[in-house]
Length: 207
Image 1 (tube, rainbow, N blue to C red):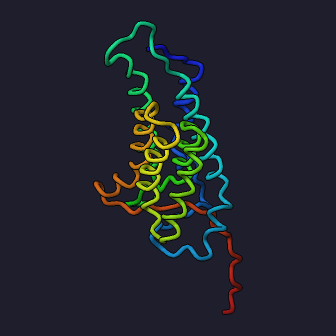
Image 2 (image 1 turned 180 degrees about the vertical axis):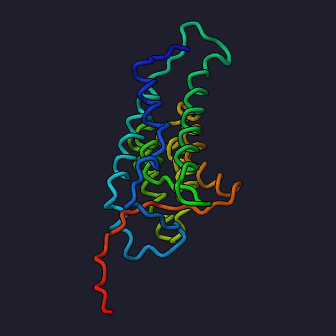
Image 3 (image 1 turned 60 degrees about the vertical axis):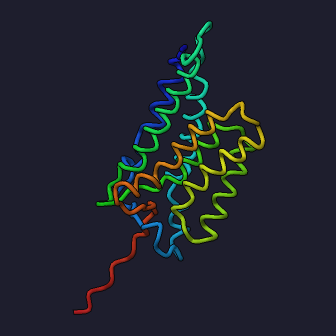
């Protein structure tokens, strides 16, 4: 296995840094199973979500480009780059999900997994899969199913559009994307999304 360290090390930095480390005092959390009327704009106003998409996309792209099969590799050795990428993708999603400042909660890394799909997969596959997952999950008002639906859509559309030549890569990223949903089933925690808390003016003291 050949490793391009110039790409691999920055990819690790981008993918394995928990976004919650940058949540300041103005960031609040809301469960994905709660009503979001009046909160969508606050979530969109939190620029860290946009940063999450970008850094996950760049990190996943660098990760995909940083491993090559060694010349003359045979048997299982041909799959070592894919196995290494699979491990990093899964670890990255676990870190983004489980490192949360809210007690008994886990981050719902919608933006991060969207970035992984965009950076790691062919453009048409990631685009169609994301549209399907968003429409199904948010149309049904069951946000947590975004993760398993996106995983299933990635594998199904990936095989349909690219054949079986990318099957193992599709399965790798699909497993990583399903982890937030699976982790909250195994370790009961509330999936939460961060949003920007508006500072309200203090009411005058009328005493």
